[in-house]
Image 1 (spheres, rainbow, N blue to C red):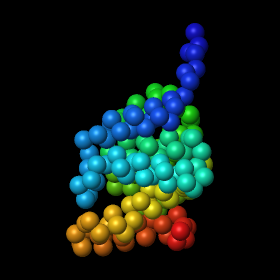
Image 2: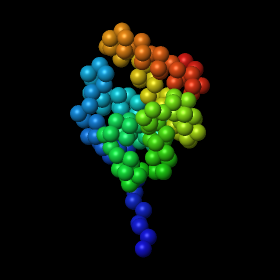
Image 3: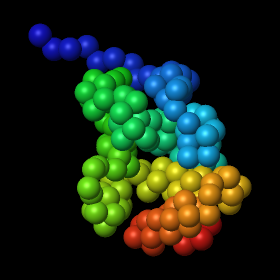
Length: 154
């Protein structure tokens, strides 16, 4: 017996799932983590991203942060491309940055999601809320990833 294909989740449903999954999380500055997800999704949208990429933007940290499981992602009513993008931008424990960047570059649609993620992470107003040591470390980390991805200043 073959399984009947399910209609993919709407972007509103993906947003609701992501917001619920990350509801109790805060970023390094103590702000609701869901604001980062919103900013990345909006960054993808404003850069011309399609529905698969916008859905992936909402979910880009879900598996990495253990907000949702890899099994949830596998079984979710999402396009294969959205799932591939989420997997590509999910940093793995002890993974060299070069391998991470290579996977992003090799996955259709993933670079745009990571670009929006890095842009929000490196936002000067967001970084200003951090202590100097953390701000310096993260600024260097984001600059290195941008270089590995071949991104020029936006």
